[in-house]
Image (cartoon, rainbow, N blue to C red; front, side, top):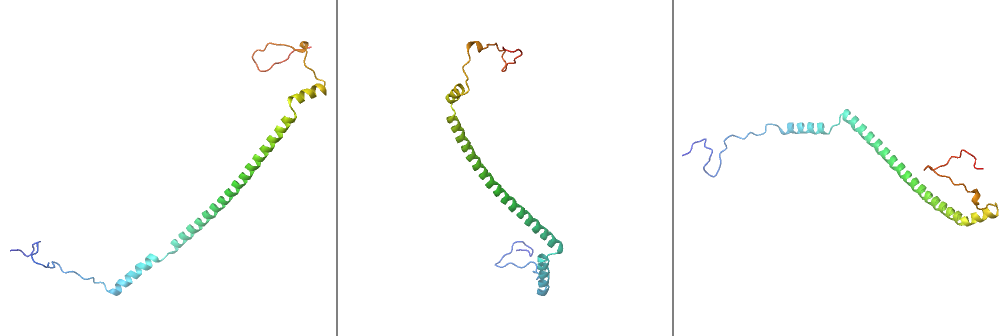
Length: 146
């Protein structure tokens, strides 16, 4: 029926084609190798320690500088806010003074003071000189008008 090396095995159990080899390492040797691997993985050599120390120092310096810059920025924002409030206060005060000045010195008051106290009068017709403009915004006087 079947040959000995058939791939299909009849029956309810499969025969072992090759014997299974047991691990030849002794438990003692296995523990020693594992211990060496653990020591190698967890051990820190001097180069790694120097690198980690430098990395920590650099990180500390960067953190301190960041905190300083953040603090100075907060201070500047506070100063700027105080200056803006002072500017608004000065603008309001300036507008108040300007409105009081304009209210106290109206054009009628100026005209009355100029005519009464300073003796000024309106120009008469013989004092008015008419000239033709050439389109410029200013006039040069080369000859005396008298």
